[in-house]
Image (cartoon, rainbow, N blue to C red; front, side, top):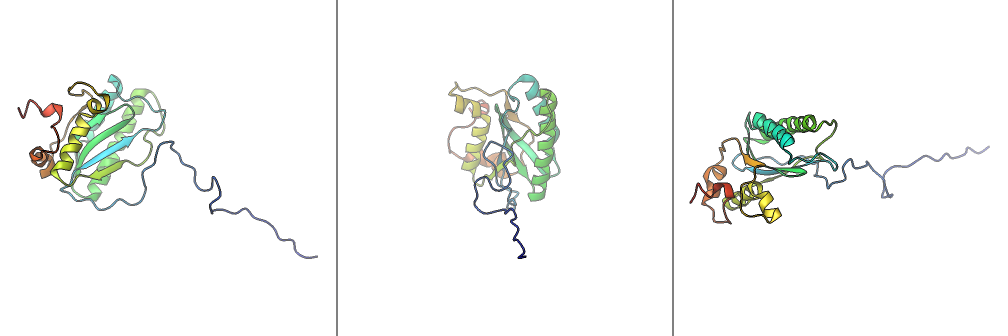
Amino acid sequence: MKPRQLSFPTWGGSRPGAGRKRRSLMPLVSHKMRPEHVARFPLHVVMRLERGGPGLRTKHVFAAIREAFVLSADREGFRLVHFSVQGNHLHLIVEGDDKRSLSRGMRALTVRTARAINRAAGRRGRLFADSYFARELKTPAEVRRAVRYVLDNRMLHGGLEPQTDPYSGSLALPRTWLLREGWRRSRAGPLPVSEWDRWD
């Protein structure tokens, strides 16, 4: 008898549905190794929740988030300078003394914040959709636009009258020149509403 050739399942290729399934329904951020971080550049960070996560702009959830932020705001070469809490995502302006400090600071902030939100919302399990998005801000103009975008986010997107958003704020004192004073010297757009009285 001739030996009968057995058929085995195959993997890979361009078959529809092939490969590892996505865990999130929202656009993912690349898991490729992040580039080296330059200490003099602050970063704009965005952290998004899984679809179906709790609303973040309620008093008890926001109180838990802010407490987590305060406890994580200034530690081991990492600083959370400005923040804005939106319905299903967080905007942050942060500093890191190097890549390792930035990575460890963001990891600690993410874990502490996720636990605080889950506890306040009475839920368990995965909360943030995927790896956070981060962009270095390299010029006074970029920093000015980013700071205003974060602190005035609700006003800018909601078409509201100029007002300070109670769900945004500032925590750690910045150490980079760009966040200490450089962004205020730029003329790239208005200052955040919270700065108006200070610079009248």
